Image 1 (spheres, chains in turn purple, yellow):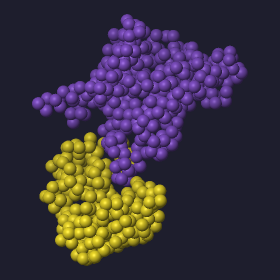
Image 2 (tube, rainbow over the protein chains, first blue to last red):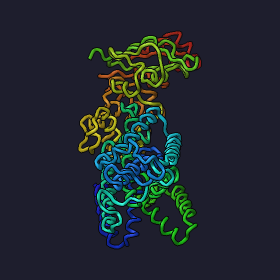
Image 3 (cartoon, one colour):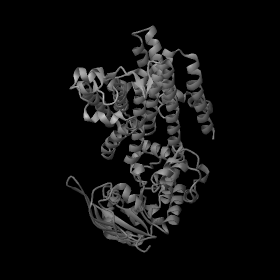
Image 4 (cartoon, rainbow over the protein chains, first blue to last red):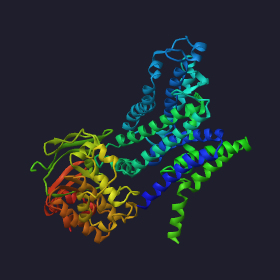
Length: 344
Length: 248
């Protein structure tokens, strides 16, 4: 019951901070930055589910983030080009014709479905191939990271069809709303913040459900779960697919808020950056990953404004400190103190 | 229900040319509390591994009319074959109740899984009672003493509706009192089930076994009641180093 109350208070505080305080206190520029961090936080909730609860150290969430982002970006480019129009960069670098696999994303409905379905299906196929063969631990981590690297290289090579290194950018509107209008930018922030709250609610329901207990059981004793008559691969696949869908949605929101998606935002380095906030915030807690992701990203921006070359050392030191002294993350400080008090 | 027995014929397990189980044939009827003994390396645990799908085997292992060999581990479990391991493996971070609830739920559909546990299932309540863990139901399983962990494992087999229980050294490391309690527990639950206990502890075997199968070098050496097996000269020979113990 106490845990129940804690979660409800957490949701109330989160909603108040994101939907009331932040828009009232922050300038448009800062609010848009926070919107970007909120996208990272959505990815982080998924990583918390897959890694914190499911024990799958996924170093390749950039792939799913990228899939969601590119689907949205393609739609925005097509919408800007008008009905049966051709996006600007294709006229410059490509054949001047829209490739067949772009066409479905002219439809807003297909786009919204694709943002969730494409990362989910890729994760489903991948999860089925990997977890059924009982690949786990460091091997899974390396595999997922290699995938992120391969995905980024693949994108870089496709200059004519998806913009190569430049990526897709210069969007003018979002489902009919002009993106240069500050009111619409605020609206985008509200959409991202509400999505984060919904994603957290989904994670909460998963954690307190029987599935959540089962997922933890698989994390701790995978073989034992098999001997209870479950196929652990199925349980891991579900968590992995949900995490991928969350990353896809985050990518799709990232595109209109930041205005660009390029291979640099989906490769190995961003995939690992997603993880740092989760580790620091507390990977197996409900709010830890999201709060950690926002705080780390915020600290990065403000600290690199004041000390441009200093941030990377600070980030490394923080990561080391947390891993060495608080392996379950900063949000476990409270329970740690409670335990020491009980022990003395 | 009269098909509820375990029938092994010519089960053979080979690892890289080494024959660990060499044509074992045995039948364990329902209600029998069968002990599987033998010197180290006799193939006792490997035989259990073969039945539960962990080690690839040839021959046949029938449960009723269903062939077990060649199926996946979790499918065999769903047919009603449960096992424990030499070291108790419970989910240390989950409570006793959660452990049992997970064990009870292999047949649950996705919708039930996505909801919270609203009440304790009757079979879980019953199992808590049977294995005597009612008082510690909300404790994390990791803090339980060794004996209670083993009982929790047996409880998990009960709620997962196992009709054949394969227990690998359940009383290893237990105190005398815990051994006696475990023996009584096995008697109680064994009445309606088929129980096979792999064991080194001869005193424990003498007290609780209905029947005994002796394995040696992967083969069945002798089978019968405790008295028959003890009187068998071949068994005494194999246990030469420990003959006094077996023959006592």
